[in-house]
Image (cartoon, rainbow, N blue to C red; front, side, top):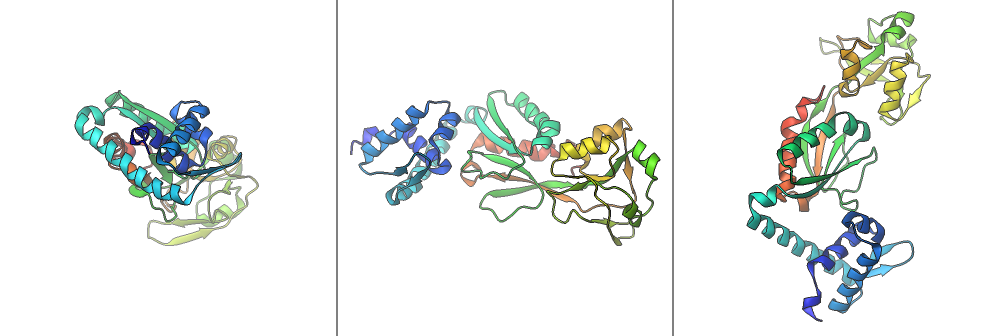
Length: 304
C-alpha cells in the first residue's frame, strides 16, 4: 500500500458514501460530480489494497473489511476536525457549514428567522437548511442538527430538550358566529373539529380545566388533514375548530381573524427537542448554533 494515496479527501468520500449509501447523494452534498466520488473510492481501495464497498446499479454496501475500515476512518476524521478547529481557535468556530433540519411549516414561519439571526452574528458560517416533515436518518442524510416537534423514539443521537409548545383551540369568527361558541369541552360534540391524522389519538381531545380536572371530548371530523398548512387554511375558511400550536396561527390571532376557543382549558403540551449527531456535537460551529437556538427558541410564539 502506498500510504500517500490515502488522503483525507478520499477518506471523507468513503465515509459519507458508507453512511448515506448513495454516490449521487454524496456528490450533491460535496458539490462534486459523481464520477469524482467514484474516483475517490477507487483510488482509496487501490491504496489500502482491499475492496471496501460492494456496488450495484441500485445500492452501495460495505464489505466486511469496509465496515472495519469505516470505524477507523470515522475516528480519524473526527480527530482531524477537532485538531483543525483547536488550531484555528475562534476562526474555526465561526467558519464552515452546518446542515440543519426541521419541519417544513415551522421552518418557514419561524425557524428561518432564528437561522438568519445566527448568521448575522456569525457571518462566515454557512447553513444548509433541510425542511421536511419526515423523520430523517441524521447520519445517512448528512444532518448535523435537527429540531423535532413531538415525542421522540429511542435514538443514539444527543438530545437537548428545548421546551414545550402548548396547543390551543382556535376557530374563525364566522364559524363561531354561525355555529355558536362552546362553553365546555362537552359542547365540542356538536361542532366540526378539524382532525390531524398524523397525530396519535387525534380522534379525541383531552383538556384540563383550571382546577386540574381532565375532560375527554369527542367530536365530528368532517375534514381530516395530515399537514399544518392545510389545517391553517381550513380554520381560516371556517371549516371548524382545531387544536394547533400557537406558532402556527399567532399572526391570525393578532389580526383577530381567528379566536381562541375554550380559553379556560388547556391541551397537553408537545415537547420541542434538538437532536445532534454525536460525532458532530464537539464541532465548534455546531456548538455555537446549538447554544444560539437554545437561548432564542422561546422567542417563537407559544414555546416555553
